[in-house]
Length: 103
Image 1 (tube, rainbow, N blue to C red):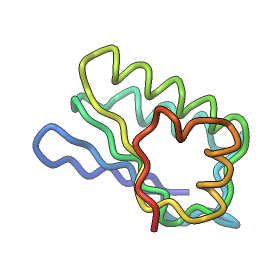
Image 2 (image 1 turned 60 degrees about the horizontal axis):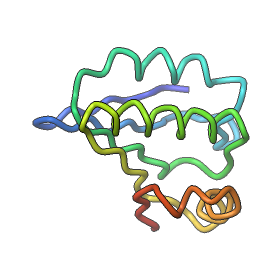
Image 3 (image 1 turned 90 degrees about the vertical axis):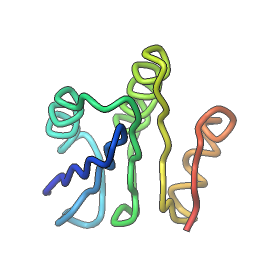
């Protein structure tokens, strides 16, 4: 898996490339967390264009990252979310407080 960070003004977009089986899960959570720790932008866009599956470790990461950026006055948004991922986010009630852009 490759994580591409695209910084534009005060927003960093996180893109996931070369995902095995298009999944984000426990096997790659540490890599994702380490990349996010180094981001200095005020706002984050998490791009799920190449993602078809997330597990509970990614749900935890999303909540933790949302809280960090919100508490620092920034914004957190998930973009290009497919139907399957949106349903997972909806079942976990994350759609009630996260800004999500569907594909």
